[in-house]
Length: 428
Image 1 (cartoon, one colour):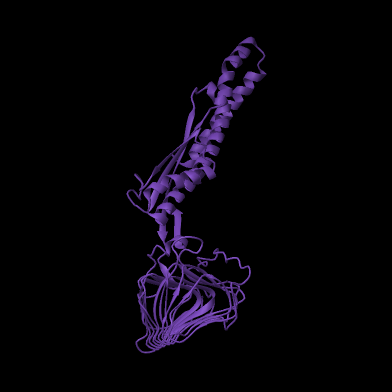
Image 2 (cartoon, rainbow, N blue to C red):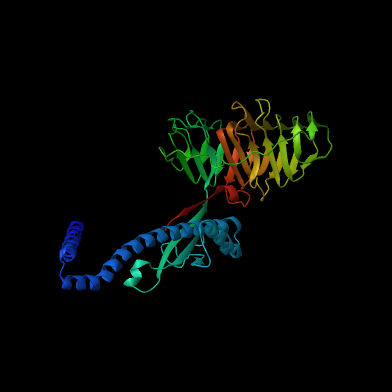
């Protein structure tokens, strides 16, 4: 039966019913009054059923909202923590925040889903919410409480992209030249719409990733696999990351460590640049290092190490206030895995000058576990810089690899990277 036929029949039945009702109303005989009295509960019942159906639709929308929120919270919680026991509490909190009432509503949480296309998928969660919706006028016809329910399935994933160029228009937003070999075990994304957004030049230069995606396109060069061009632009994945509050200076003036001595630095606000030029070992204690209008220079064969470290460069930064790792430096730093800056190793404020370039150069060896986040600034690996870290991610305005720099096997699987880069979406 076609939709038009159904509609015509419904209209015809309604017209017939209305005409009959009008005849009963106009008929003043006793029999008509009796029929009216007999049929009136039926008329009221159908009227009430229409009212109740509208209310049930509203209830359906509310339970769907609750189920959606709970499913997303459940999937997100497991991806973040891997803790099965924390899934239900997290889902219940989200459900309550979206109108769930445990006196009238019921919720069932499945991880992984027990039905649907993602049945058994550990990255997904299934939630069913039901509520008792009492009948109003329709109880004259149906004397029972209606159960209204909704189901939702959500899936969480860690972003596969670990090299992001956020520049929206420039040519060479990502450059590889001078024999540089750049091999990422994850995705590469260029947000520039320029036809040469990615530029590969020079013998031996090559860019490899699990996937290469460009809003614009690239010049001819060694890109493995072939780049996918003309994709939609993306938002900065860390745009909502808050800058830390700055209130006064813990260290005034420049901090310089030279000679061959070992040293230890403590977290705090540095209102002068840090220069590590010693041939000894400098240890950064865990915590947040705020460089307020200041930079960090590591060179002269220094060894720098630290765990649970975040280095923030403030909005007051100028072109001289950058990160420079050079002259055979050995740098082994890891970001914290909890707190506001979980996963963040370097963070340049969005409002800092856009002509700042951070340099990882000159035969340096780097094991950088965390996100290098320079949203409005440029990053350059050059002159024999080497990194074999498997837990790094670079997000910057532009990025350049030149002069036989070598990076290998970057991927975003580390727990330090997960908290800010997990995406969750409703799939059923």
